[in-house]
Length: 184
Image (tube, rainbow, N blue to C red; front, side, top):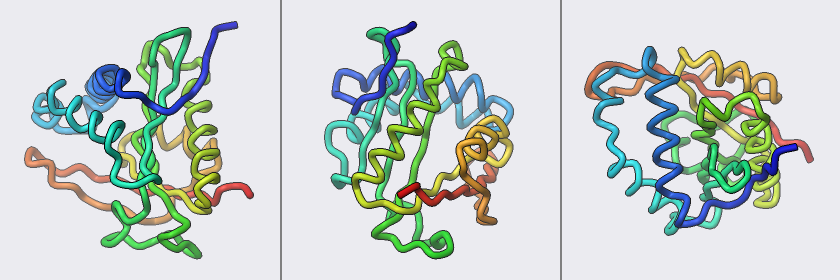
């Protein structure tokens, strides 16, 4: 059995998190996200953004978790406070901002897929949210990302009817929102 775990991200993980994001998006989203957008994502930009998220999160409810196999970071998940994206899009029915969080991205490097890392990341994310008193969680994914949607639905998430169109500067990216109520 492989030595696998999920833990909070550390400053030393930032380069791997950025690399995983870039490689995963370029592999999994090449037919979803405009090529110019993917080409503009440089390691330097990604590293700077993830360094900030890991070492100086804007609140205690913001965090990054990493999936590890042996001593290698193979995936990650980010958690944000609800106010980071709800103002224009509303809350799930019965939810309030204080008890709601945003999840995403949740990515596992493709070559490490099908080993349970995404499920472990999701379980650790839910545990972390519950410790913060979160009752409702939301996630935005590209509408064309059927693999992520199937994974989330299989984990108990559901589409909630919300959609948005993001202007990427190189075309429109449509996203759909899923939600879940966390088990008590």
